[in-house]
Length: 427
Image (cartoon, rainbow, N blue to C red; front, top):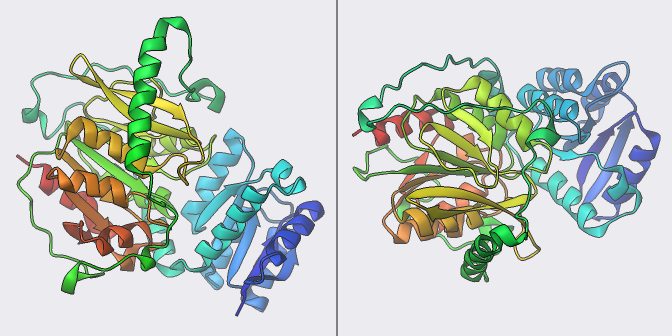
């Protein structure tokens, strides 16, 4: 049967175009349209759609309020559409905290000109959201929304470092002021540019036959009797100089259930969350406000510091290089050789080059199989790999791929991951 979609948007133009796009796929159908949040709530109860597409800003009742009411009365997977502004990004994350599953930028230009890649991405997102676990999603959204953390002056793991960090944190007030830029080809840094691009090409060679969008269910199971089963946590006893986390659909809320619960562990954390441009800055600010770690959107040239968390900028690729004993972030424009921008496999492959097996890598909820190959590279060098378990995932794709490939050391429920990280990192 076709996936039934309810469209909720105050723009008649957008509703019409969205209907044309959805009905252009014979596995999708539009079962109804609503011009505001109130009507959307009513039609959700009446029509019982498989998926709802929801605008954020609408008259009568806004999208955030509508999401809350729908989740309270008739829980349904919801895909939000958001404007590419600071306010739009902030409202989108509030909608996710209210229970929405995923979001897409509301780009009228793509819709009006029917750009095929954008249309296919929209259809794929609707299908992925339709397979999500709404009940699990709303329970974790509620718990993360109430999390508050006071950043202490010192770390409980202070014995692991001999110096005190004196880093000034700067968080821009607008997206443009903190927007990550690509490498420039000026003569002053041409040598660095060439070296960075050579490193990037090496990573692309490693990932030449990898499809990050491949359904995890299509991958061969080699995990034996433990396939898809939650494991009993046991410390590996290995040293970790860095924590690397990859996530996609459901990831923003999952990360809010992990990072704010961590004490200062005196290692950097690197996060690659599938997210469009203009949203990662706002997400970093929201996560920073909840966490003891200093959370920033990564910028080209950043040096990885302990007790700092770096989020890959949307629409770009993030790799790393060593310079004078330190690890430097390099931000590059992506290309069509990989599915996602940012891509977990790309960043993880680069980290594997720099850190070998001294990385604790974690794959959280998300569709597709991005991160599997990167985790395989860590594993080959003796690294530790964890995956979120099926029951607590919004979409059991990326973690399932790692489990199916037989490279996951632990399969853990979301609510236990932070605590297990703390135990694993203890000397």
